[in-house]
Image 1 (tube, rainbow, N blue to C red):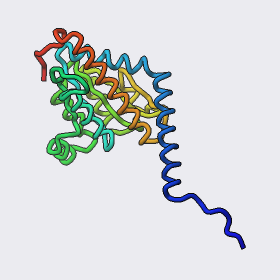
Image 2 (image 1 turned 90 degrees about the horizontal axis):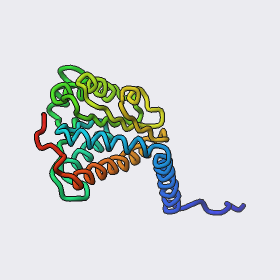
Image 3 (image 1 turned 135 degrees about the vertical axis):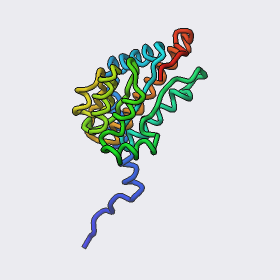
Image 4 (image 1 turned 30 degrees about the vertical axis):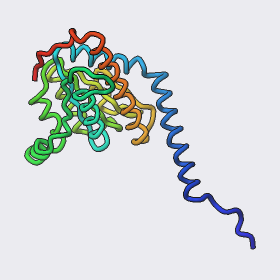
Length: 213
């Protein structure tokens, strides 16, 4: 009795998975480029205006989004592609002593909002990342930022969740798959870094060196 043709090998499976994943990511990126480029441009303008006024950028997210918050903060403080002065950005995911103290003494939902109460000032920008848009600590961070008269930029997924409703500008990636959403968030984050850096290089004299903590 014939066993039929052999099934795909592990390598062939991996090649299929690679093509499918990259094509799906590319399709989401193309859709964002087509439908949301104006939103990304407005986000860049918001960041540039705040930094020119001597304000700073705070970032937050959970898990992979926490890593991306730290990544983008590093791009601002260090550099993205060009030599220039450092820019004030703080990832609220980085201070493990503060995170664990707040979670232990208050509740986990407060880990970002408590830091925003301490560090945020009027005119600062919060970049809040949540693939679902429903992370309670990130939503509360956005709400708290508004009480401090900060500007909230949200990077989230297809539904936007509650986070999008508490943002001044929100980018909704057209996907429900967490890794795809995160990959587009990183690409958009790099665009924001690029636009801010171009503005700084073009007119460094317009960026205030007197910064409010």
